[in-house]
Length: 156
Image (cartoon, rainbow, N blue to C red; front, side):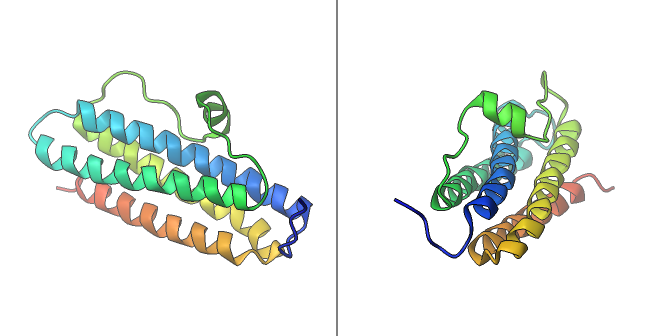
């Protein structure tokens, strides 16, 4: 059945391309955060273990929201490691870094998600796609706040 929501097929495809990158970044950050939750050690173990758990749970909910928006726009959502690896701007972390390096890498990941979300806005605004704009704004707020909270752990 045709989709007639006031956004052209071409505009929806362009928005979905950006949302697919956002989904890949969010899932990659989810996986990285969950990995660090499992493997963090050191004097800040309890604090970081709980903080990372809160963060990966929030990210798990976010991937669903992003994928559902892609589906509402009429396209399949990417959902494999291969697709996420190709689409994500967040590099995989090999090995188990020290706690302070985990924090730094997660700040970088949070900021990367913000940049990806921000990059989608021109297409969203041209198409007058308020639901996607709202989703992007909410995601940016969460990631900017989380990056700030993580950065605050690195100050003396």
